[in-house]
Structures are given as C-alpha cells and as structure tokens.
Image (cartoon, rainbow, N blue to C red; front, side, top):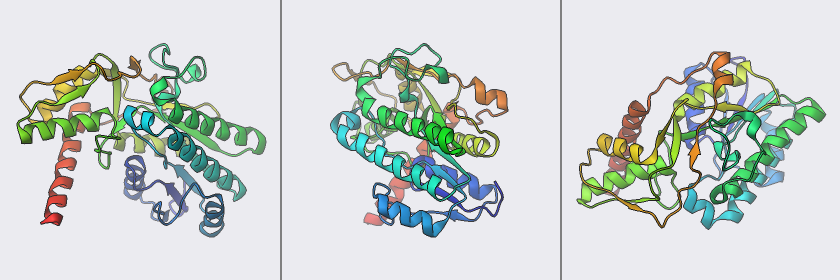
Length: 315
C-alpha cells in the first residue's frame, strides 16, 4: 500500500478496527477514512453505496461486525446473523462496484467445525457441523468468506479473508452480558478483588482456547494486506492454547485476586478446543510479538484506566 492511499477501516472504534488504525498510523499512513456507526449504518445498502461513491477508498479493512460471547449469541441469534450478513454484503459489493484495489475481511476461528481436528487448518472449513452456541455468527462469517471468494473468481477482485483466533486487548468489550471469555474473566476477578467476593465462572474450565493480542492481529492484517493475495483464507493465531481454568488462574494473578473461584457447570462450555494452525502465515515470515502474560498486564492496565476515567467523569 502506498502511504498516500485512501484506506477505509470499517469498524474503527471496535477492538480490531482501532488496533488497525494504530498500526496504520504508526506505519505512516495518514489518509485514513473513518466513520462511526452513527455516521454510517453499514446495514443500509443505499448509504453504503453513497459513502463509497463519495469517499473513493483504495483499500478496505472490513473489521465491522456484531460480536459477542456465548450468552450474546444465544440471546440475539437473529441480530447476529442479520447484522453481519448485511454489513458484509454491502461493503464487499460496493468495494467491487467502486474499484477498491484490495479488501481484507476479518473473520473468526468459530467458522470451523465444532469437532474439527486440532490444530485447525484452513482446509477444515465446512467439513463438519458448527458449534451450536455461536453458529449464527459463524454462518454469517462463512458467507462473507464465500462472497470474497466469489467476487475474486467472477470479477477478479483482490479480496482476502483473515481468520484470527480469540482476540483481546484495548477496546475489548467488558460487558458481562456480551463479553468474550478473557475480558469477562478480567472484569469478574477485578470486581471480586474490589468487593471481597468469590467470582462465579461459566462452565467447567476444561475447554482450551488460544488468545492473540489485538495489536499482533493488526500487524498481521497489514502484513497480509501488503503481501498476500489468494482465495484461500488465512489463519492468524498465537500457536498455543491454554485451558480456561489455567487462564482464570493467570488472570487472577495479574489482577491481584487471591481468593477462590466457583465454576458454574450448568453453563455451556462451547467448543472443547480451538487452536489455529497458523503455519501458513508463519511461513510467509510473520509471528506474534506479545506473550499472553504481557498482553494480560497491558489489557488490565487499559481496563483500569477506563474505569478511572469513567469514575472521574461521574464525579
């Protein structure tokens, strides 16, 4: 990408989008096109078409999505499938119509089958049933992948799809009703330490998950946007996973919580294991730089800063 290129980051206020903005800014790209969801509802095809006609972006990072954990997916299945299908359909199609040079779609590791062999290779997509607790989001993301592949095949569009593993970091969602596991753990242990209570955690603690700091993910996206062009999706992960129970202990240590914890086994675990095979991007020369303990310390520090700012605003 030329430093003078006009780059649209869809979803720039979210965790991934904001990290991409940071990475682009640090790399000297200063012609960034940013719109909040209030300024541009990506579910509205007419408004998206008008935006592309006016803004004329050269490159698009499609990081906008409705996201959430098991509870959110189970509670709002219609919103998860409709919103994500609408956002992707409008942005991808208008990128084609208006001659965008390259588009990168952010997907998710939940696209892979529930009982996928581990670690999960890109070739395992659509080889088995999905995990029921997040199938609405997964189906939408798979449709986005196939749309990128279809537009590449029929129109020659340079559209690529990147599948990051579980992400965390600044601008993560810490709402316990919709948060993913790591952010939820950070908040639960923080509140337990502050209140002198015992945190209740979902499931058995036995599932294994892989976590990647969002700033590493953003660097991978820039790496792929400038050096990868193929219909095959690309996994982006840390290369190792951790049991949720072990993660909980690590989070408790970072937060400074020294009490016990209660596991509510009536709550679902989700997929038993999700570890990405990221050997293809590694072969291209990319690898993550932030370890999980260091990333947790950074994320907790950011979370405490936001709490402090919020409390100062209230007072």
